[in-house]
Length: 599
Ligand SMILES: [Zn+2]
Image (cartoon, rainbow, N blue to C red; front, side):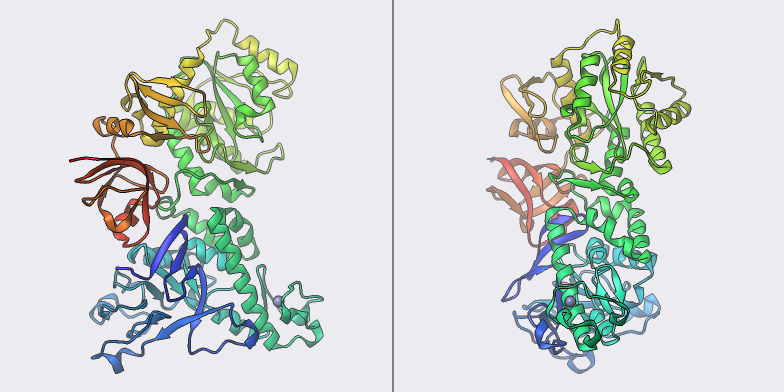
């Protein structure tokens, strides 16, 4: 039961939350104990001094701890030595009293569970700094064991250089302890790392402490600066999470320290942890400027869906073309030239690093319409590998009578040749020098001579079916709406069955939003649903977590969900994951689009 913490926004495992004290505090936040004096008067106000310790278990065992709503009270706990065997830890596990003020429990991996508190203080974390795999495994283990709508607090860990990674991992609260200690050792912290002021020619920071000349800069100045630098980094990271852009930032930020780079790579190996928390749709740009971008969960999930859910329904030659800087691709000049040559006689699939392959029907979905990558005209060996693998997987699932590769010789061609070798298919190559030269475009048009054209209406029908597969699961395109008609244009298609509208394509996400009629067809079809079962009320606008009885299906942030209960049937978009819905006691769970009263 969480009364005093609420998650408002999510960016993967990172969240924007609120500690609901007498004065609410936005998280991720820099907090400290009330009885620890601020290191210098000048940094007062940067750190929320809100933690208070209710004392040791031994002295207050028989009494209920006291607290108030102005601070987060750390409940009495036993400190067991590190390395205590698990069964001993369990035998001595503290039972926490049910209190009516904001509270936190101190946990170790052995005792991490739902103790009914608003926050959890993970003990023994300073020793994990510098140890990438141990850090990642410890945080994931604990985050999975405590309720999702509670705050995770790591003490003695945060510095400006590592703060982004801590938040990315799912940490909500940190304190200035490490920054203060480093300051007392004379170490000057920035988001790039640490150095001794005496080794520096200048101090790059505009804070009051750094106005002191380097020659006179003492340890008190260093402490003050370090805390300010950490507070500034907390604000930077918090804003990144709000914008859904923490990962873009982190791919650059972790480069300043090898252990952070290693930790980010370890997280990329934890697909289940990150995928469960990554939104399905977003309307923010994705910056893909490092090789780590290929391993991010949204890219992996897109490649997975294209090779395991999507199926081409075009009875036309496959035409592989290069991606364009402009998104969606069909708005670019190069793709307009390709389409003029193709003239509805081929199925266009764009090859791209770091997404892999994007069938034309999915070009408006996330992240195909949203990424911006560094284009040099050359792909690295790793990029060629990745694109070749996705293309091979795609070709194993989709049969074409012919495959034409209208791609540049650099990179693309090699990825194509790998896919040919892997699948035994033979591609026809139509580019001699560059894909948009007259010679190349004529060769493409000539290669399609005699191929029949398909109609625009067929293309729109197939687009709806492809999006259904991508969004609702393999074969959903055929099973969800039989006999549907399409009105309007891509990317704002309206889908009707008889006189009823069942879905609309949402231009900024490329996916479908269902109407009530569409939701009923989903329930009646054989396509597995994602359902949120609610109590006996009719939701208006949104469903809050306490009103949820159960969920069915793997629900991710941004997924279409059915909302149903004894008195209501509705459809909307999930604002939290299915696990969060059932385990949370606060927060908006579903934004309801349409609802009706039932009996
Ligand atoms: Zn400074």
